Amino acid sequence: MFRLITVVGSVLWAAGALSAQPAPGREATSQRFECADTLDRADGQPRKSVFCDKRSEYCFEASGGTPLSHGAKCLPLPRPGASCKDLVLEPGSQCTGDASSGIRVDFAFP
Figure 1 (cartoon, one colour):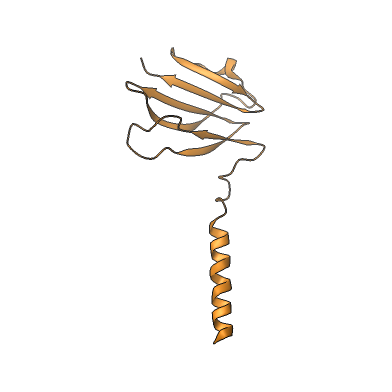
Figure 2 (tube, one colour):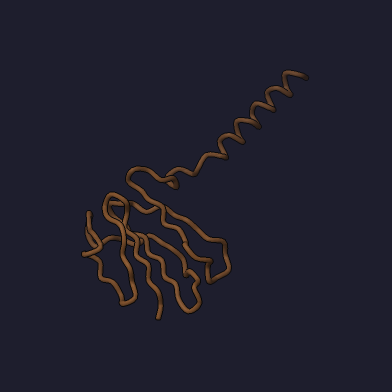
């Protein structure tokens, strides 16, 4: 009986340790960067975070009206290794970052 309790306890401990690990592909690496809502979301949902690929994506967050986020998301770069100069930005947009840190575009609706 004691052995059964020990085995069950070990399995539960291992399952807990595995569930505490971030999902594969969701963590930051040297080739990925975090793209997160910087403002409370307009849809009332909790702020969200995803990871973009520095080589092929940029982070885009739109806000408008009252200072609320419409959700940060990864969008494709026009070409690998692109910079802020290569992005076509709407009036009211601000582009920051580079290929080493990741590019972020914030757009504020007028």
